[in-house]
Amino acid sequence: MKKDRSHFPVAATRRDFLSQAGNGFGALALSYLLARDAEALEKERSPKLSNPLAPKRPHYPPKAKAVIFLFMVGGPSQMETFDPKPVLDKLHGQQLPPSFGEIKSQFLKPGTPLMGSAWKFNKYGQSGIEVSDLLPHTATCVDDIAVLRSCYTESFVHAPAMYEMMSGRLLPAHPSLGSWVTYGLGSESENLPAYCVMTQPEGLPEGGSPMWGAGYLPALYQGTQLRSGSTPILHLARQNEISREQHQRMLAFMRRMNELGMQRNDSELSARMASYELAFRMQQHAPEAVDLSKESKETKKLYGIDDPQTVEFGTRCLLARRLVERGVRFLLLFSGGGPVSIQWDAHDNVKTNHEQMCRWTDKPVAGLLKDLKGRGLLDSTLVIWGTEFGRTPVSENGKGRDHNPTAFTMWMAGGGVKGGQVIGQTDEIGFRTVGERYHPRDIHATILHLLGLDQMKLTYLHNGRNERLTDFGGRIIEQIIT
Image (cartoon, rainbow, N blue to C red):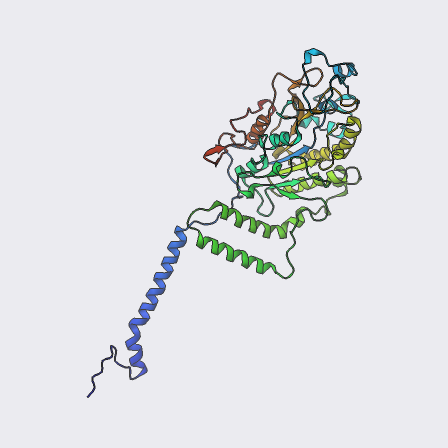
């Protein structure tokens, strides 16, 4: 008789089979429980993708939460806007006195005479600040404005001076002011970019995109360029063949795959995922943010949108207010760009140039300040009017003015700024600063301070060095702060 060599006897009935397989069912259950616990432990140990643009706590209580920087491309003349020079007017047509030294510039010819201003200055508001006739609308806001008359940069060439004003350095590839602010504070909006840039339709300033670039900070912190017209944000519309639900599933799958693949805290991967998810949310929320159709006629008129001369810049100023309302942290608006004829670069004829540029911008700027104040937003929004340098007191070819980095005017309003005052001064002809003078590092240090950021603590490790916006440090302009 043949001997049965099988390990397990053959079950004769169903009851025998279940009885003999009992231990196997227990093993299956144990396997499931062990796998579940292992997966939970792995999730607990593995790093989770975070949103780099999530709101961050400032170093100390801030006076401002958002910034709108109005950049006048090309260099407005201080003597024609906010810095009256009656002595210069008296010396019109005469040679520069030797006591003022030599003017170094790009295009001036030796012996070019001094040129007075073609406009009158008047005192406005309770503060009595003097403003040119070129800016009648801005003049009505002077009690909310602190005028800085003694600003300077270190280059009389447009692009390097622009880089210095926007990044603190004369060369490109360093993070811009807006990038540092969003790196330090994140965004209050989950559905819109933290840092928005609105350029003039005719073209970019000489400095180009490095003026709002992130430099060596993660790319997520660079400015998002908005354009004029019906589609301020390109590539926003969702493809018709892909539904919202499909987009959501795709993002969820990508996030899951990236979480499973992360062995360490990868900031670049987190930034990439955050940008994908932000783009998805913007498809739903950004169209409403840039839709001006629901704004009242009175509001549009306040910004000059009813006037062909002011409609373009006025529209961008109104968009800036709407974006600040919705939590955007930093907005950079350019007046001027592209052809020299539509910049503040008044080489040929300062009268013709500044009449045009002021006509386009004066009412919208005043409208922005008044609208922010009326809505209770000015106290938390820092508005800056600035440029890369000023103009020379001597004429260029009899009618224009050349670049002058040794003295120019900027102003700030709202966001913890004490308005109704003039800070700093220039000499009798507006050529050089006198006494306290303010470098872009000082202006940046003051902006960061108003936002609750300590300039020395806001650092980023790059090539073994803790980089800062203000490099080795700037002086906070204490007089400007409330």
